[in-house]
Length: 201
Image (cartoon, rainbow, N blue to C red):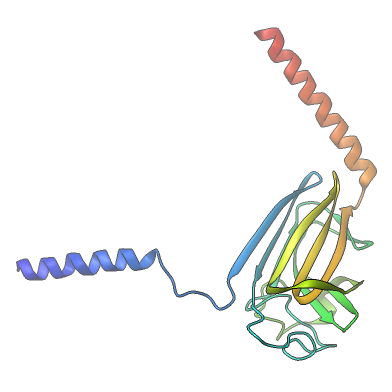
């Protein structure tokens, strides 16, 4: 009986230990979240590695839609409506896809953000697409990476890079004047609150 209880305890301990670990992913999942203007932007994507392969033009064929990452499709969420490379996009979550060529990438936002890869990609579900130039990197980017690079108080670039290629999409609020007015009002409110706290003390 004691041996059985001991074995059960060992098994329970091993199970508990195993729950804290997992097999390393070939393409680790990453979530990037950053404040943008009055809200935030979140990107959830898989990060494939180069691993000695020729990427664009072979592993990722030119002229064909790509999931912009690995495994399940890349998801991007805007907390407010944005100007996405010159086109207005309502707040919400979208699938992010790319159709690459050697010199340009067509970056697409699609209503379907829950598919695996791009196997069921439907262009009829596209919300917007913008075509941006591809720049050659000085150093190889081993793991695919998406970052949000602030360019001002109310602007940023969505930066996508892998292997020797990099592309950027400019992001701005869809209504910059309205954002400025709201920000000014919020500053006024904060000043009123600060003054009220000073009076209390």
